[in-house]
Length: 193
Image (cartoon, rainbow, N blue to C red; front, side, top):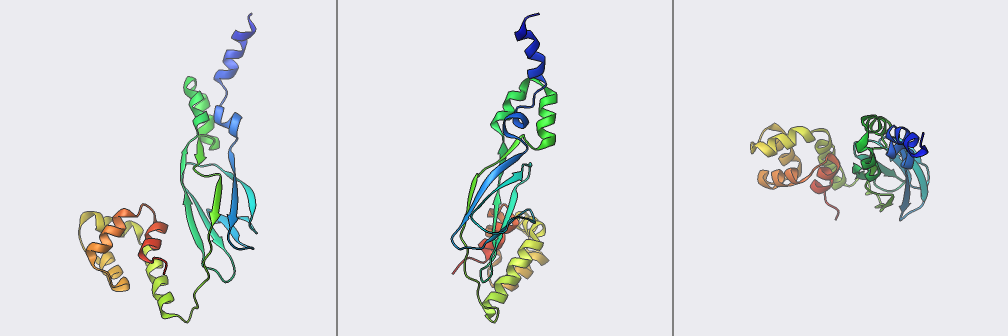
């Protein structure tokens, strides 16, 4: 039998993303200050920047939280895209399933992340407490805020946020509708000075 024809069944069963890229992605973290700890989806992945870390791929966005003593936490979300290598799987459902199960079907949008840390404000500052309450409320009530903003009603969540932030309901609704994630909403409601 011809060697080329023997190779075809093997190639049909190969999951391209898994074979060529593996189930993790190497991401480099840099920061403007030393001794920054980096957490990916809640797990410590780097105890001190700069560092290069292999992070398991997945279909959801990767939430990065950077922490350093004397600095505010830095929160970023890294989106995922379909790994272009996986398009080689069009010939086999088995290959698609393997890439999907191992996470190799996905690729994080960035291979390098720069973390810009900002000095923490003193806790005695009344403004700091107000911003913290607004961020906390936005992070924990994101879905309800999005629902009320999209429907155009000023329900209890928008009214509470209005009281906390001293902003008009129409302005708040515009900010909420434009924020695709909890972290972005919290940042946009409490802009840097």
